[in-house]
Length: 492
Image 1 (cartoon, rainbow, N blue to C red):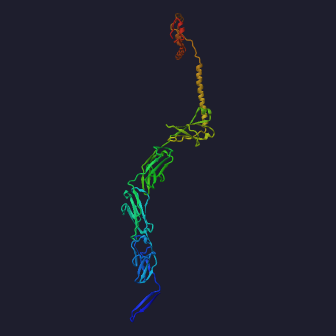
Image 2: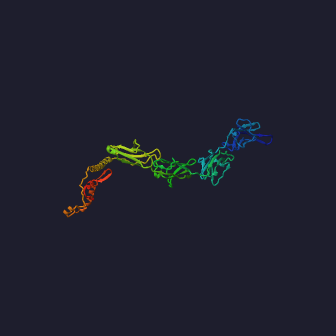
Image 3: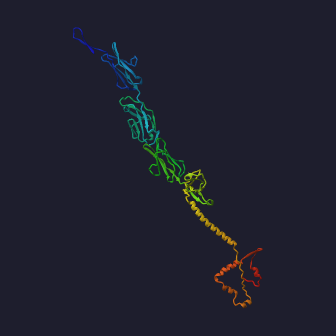
């Protein structure tokens, strides 16, 4: 409520109307601009207003009684700092009257510090890879714009670098892009507000791209079938995925893994292997690694028939052999159960059970190759029965042959040669005989013998007559004594 009063002075018509308030209002105080808080280096203006005229305004902070400045309706902080934070009030005064305003809190803080990061987060990059740097203020991120620096030099958009809001993208990295990167942010509506630069982020771009290193483990000139082969692919840097290929095929051999393992090598695993290292959109292929797989030496299992087996009647003798130039021991298996035998020969007593069992063998060594391939399986079944029959028949033949030879020898030893009287034929015949005979004995003899037996008789005569004796080193014919007694010597 206001009380209006009129005062008249003198005889004239001068009228003064006075307004008397029912209560005394407090001065109003406000910041300009009206922000919830201020950033350092911003301009802050506080305004104090009291109805009426001729007021003087005095400014105070917190509980201090010392005036902040000369009396003025406005209190201005040209560059706010942290120590300007506090409670402010003003005092409106005219003549002997004064009144304080309410307190107003002024908050001043540092601008937020942007966070600088890179994606992907690798220590080094290779030419043509893509790198993205991000400068971000999480507090009201849309109120800020960003500036980028490399080695303290402000960056701008070019063919290799694109700037978009909070990100800096290097589309195709080069070694010249290496350096120390920083960024800072400026407020879009409060122009004086600028953040400090971030801590430097080091970016390293290699001058060239090496090929992934590929090697086999263990490192053998060649592998044997059944051995494990492990190929390893390694590329400098992080976050690589590895893909494996063989020869000129483009189909991947396995899922992405640094190692490619062949648990039991086969001959057809021989070939050239290579890997491809890949991360994001970048990939590079290694050189080829040749893997050669050789077949193991073959073990052969044979049934051996020995005289002892024949005598025993129910023994199997099996022989295992690996035909190469190496020294082997052997491992025997019966129905896939290993036997306690390491020699090349295995003797098995044949029973109803063992006849049905399967036997295998293979060679073993302490050096590569550690083993040979498996022999073919052997089952006796009814081979013993067949073998006994064959051995019996063979034995009969052998016995007959032996008996025949012995008989011939005995006959030859016991046979006595037939002795015949030697026939002496004189070529010179006496006159008495010639008178009584009209035909000579020689002619009669020749006439009486068939021509076809002549040769046989000559051979027989020669065998009978050539009985040689050795007397004091002189060889003599048995008929020579009788021949010398005759008056005439006959010619044989």
